[in-house]
Amino acid sequence: MKPAKKLYVKTYGCQMNVYDSGKMVDLLAPLGYATVDTPGDADMVILNTCHIREKAEEKVFSDLGRIKDAKKDGAIIAVAGCVAQAEGDAIIQRAPFVDIVLGPQTYHRLPEMVARAERARQEKLGKRFRLVDTDFPVEAKFDFLPEATGPQGASAYVSIQEGCDRFCTFCVVPYTRGAEYSRPAKAIIEEAKNLADKGVKEIYLLGQNVNAYHGEGLSGQSEWRLAKLIEQLAQDLPQIERIRYITSHPKDMTQDLIDAHRDIPALMPYLHLPVQSGSNKTLDQMNRQHTREFYFNIIDKLRAARSDLALSSDFIVGFPGETEQDFQDTMDLVAQVRYAQAYSFKYSIRPGTPAGAYEDQIPESVKEERLARLQALIVQLQFEFNQSKVGQTVSALFERTGKKPGQLIGKTPFLQSVYVEANQEVMGTIQSVHVTDGFANSLAGVIV
Ligand code: 5AD
Ligand code: SF4
Image (cartoon, rainbow, N blue to C red; front, side, top):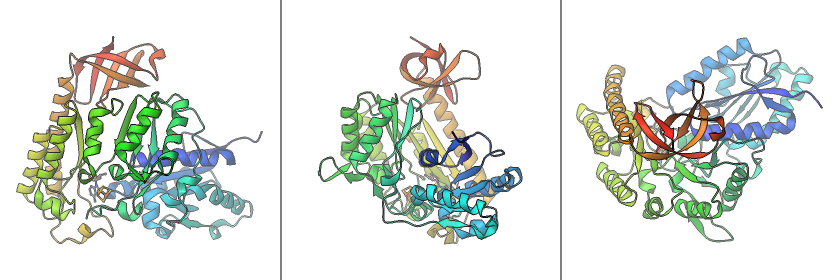
């Protein structure tokens, strides 16, 4: 057997990128590539990049600089993901040692690109060889992606939807990931079955706007919505004890999906439902297409369907034109919803987005100060949510070991990490845990 070639993959950004990186690894396995943990001795390096905020993008270029110095002679360097899609050729101008630039819609062409790069190395083409592929091809990439081959953990991602048609004025996703596309239900169910056969107990259905899912139904049925897909997965695959979906838009939170939270026990009582702002004026300028009242109404319906539902959201502070009153409206919304968890970001201008051209940009110092206030509130609410579970018995899926010997970390239905002392045999299983303590970021408990 030929010695394996070493592949180093670094993933930035969202779960979709984690899923995509896994697929790229599976795609390159037949070419003899096996993953390693450091770039230094790798024969090929892939950076799977994120373009959502300025910081994520800058990180890619600083990492590229470091990899240039550390990489093995002759290593192939590829930049994939959303920065690749957005910047294309410009990446090679800024980092001329990059061999391959490929966008998220062309991963299925990666093996061919790598084979060509390898040939170029043999023929010593040097800088004359560069490949840039940022097409939105007509063929659906998903039809060409391989099944997961290697061992799987207890929890796995399945991409079911990609792209977004909502065009929030701050967001690059509609440009980098393109128009909404939903995979057919059949392909998704097959992929989930393969994972279940490998011992997976929890799946995350992924999409940039996942609750807008409208894929082809089974055996020639018309389009299915997300609720129907989840119902079928729960019915066909009882081994999958936990189903989650991420990320959703409030406007696509239809009644059938709300009802699914009441009717499908495998659907976990945790929902990431980003609202971004609590100010109607800001929501309008963000083109979110709904009001704060509309959002509250959805939350009420969800809690009526599933009273223990834990909620999380994303927030942007310092969106152009945001006044102190607009920000207070956000603080008020957060306090009213009482999120179990939330992510907050300073607004950053993204090239080509409408809000980037708005005149009333907010000074950095104001953004920072608002972010600090919002995060303090979020941290407090998260602590209170964790505290509220003390004394209760919750289920936990065990996937990781803790830092201390004998310590394992499980995940509750509400996405909290719970630390227990337990035997390694518990790994990969779901156990009942009595919660003894609640902290800012985790719980402690004992298996019952
Ligand atoms: N600036 C700051 N945050 C942003 N997000 C998306 N675009 C921007 C931007 N230009 C945040 C949103 C989104 C999350 C994934 O990233 O909150 O929900
Ligand atoms: Fe971006 Fe989400 Fe808005 Fe789509 S719905 S444009 S992915 S923030």
